[in-house]
Length: 268
Length: 291
Image (tube, rainbow over all chains, first blue to last red; front, side, top):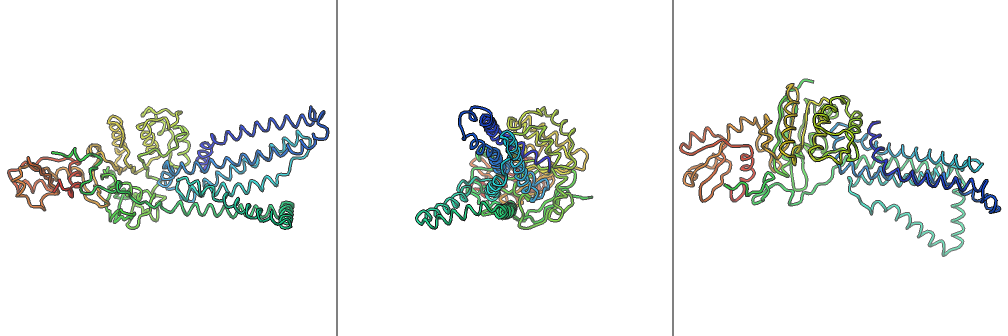
């Protein structure tokens, strides 16, 4: 199992590398700005702005974790190529159980999630150290990562449902639905100021009530992870419906294709 | 576990829209090579996929190495190696990485055996397999299949698309693999000449139905090709031949029992035939130009 996870992560490395490059660049720039805000020109010449610069820049650390989490999309692409390239058939032929084959992709996701979260923690702590203050709160980053994870796992599940056939509409369907709901709700709210004020107040309170926020996020992540895994397993075991086209049917009388040769070769 | 047949298939049925694999039954005795022949869409891949558990049959019984695949499929497949027409390993991997990966998959994986095959096949260990030629990819797959002490090789069109030199090399490897008498091969192919070269037995499938199964030499000894004039052809009873190709110049008939035909129809020339001709006449027996 370890070797197969290594295989998946090795194959995803090319897609993960650009994220690491972007994060490194941001980290470098953020470090330079933080040092300038503490000891350099920003501190000397920007007056009180140096403090607000330090306040905002520490969130770069959180950004690192979230960005790296996007690399889970490569697991989704690998899932599709494993379907189409025959790798899953090879694994089935080797006697590996379907639950392990499917579970391996979710293990890849779990690993990448841990790596992303740790990256966020490390960069956050590093920048906090540079800024001379405590590391930024990891809670919000974790909530954002949790919500993103649900969507990324949905894409992996989609790969198992469509058996490797990319379906862009199904991929963006949750985003369309959520955007639609947001537009409808806020569209209504903008026409009714009281409702808008209440809505914004409720959202602020919800975000401020950290135990509730974390609890709901964790519950949603666990629920959707299990649901995605079970649906993936169900569709992985379900066979593709094959409808034979006329050209695929075995040779009937008059069909030229016999044993892969032209009928002319049978001429006496 | 002791067993007589490496593969036993009884009444295998699988239904798709527009195609049915219909009650296929045959066995591959331990220590033999079975050639599995049929044209495109005949049901070879469906049969093989059913054996390997890639698709679930709608009916029938399958045993691999004496074990029922429904009850002990996972255990049986540990000693089975599958070779597909396309390389299932990702193009970005090299042979060394594939070896490391397969070590985690097969309990009896042998690195040294794999390395020896790579050397023998002159395959580079650090080059990405995506840059390999078709022949090299097939050799890599074969090297992988032969490196975990498999008792049964199941191949789906493994030699299709390869040049004769590479095919010959691969067939020699298979003959070597069979030397201990304990191993078996099921090999599906269009290339009947390959099967004539190495197969002990052949099974022919057409339109989802089993047409013929038996020892290759017995089949070739039994079947014959009659060449005669149109007047001689008119004397033949329909039940004595499989199909006939009649032209203005004469007739060619495929007879299933050469000895009986020689006795009954003295004076006509009956020649030995090949697997290819047997298959072609069976497949085309419903065509207008055949009778």
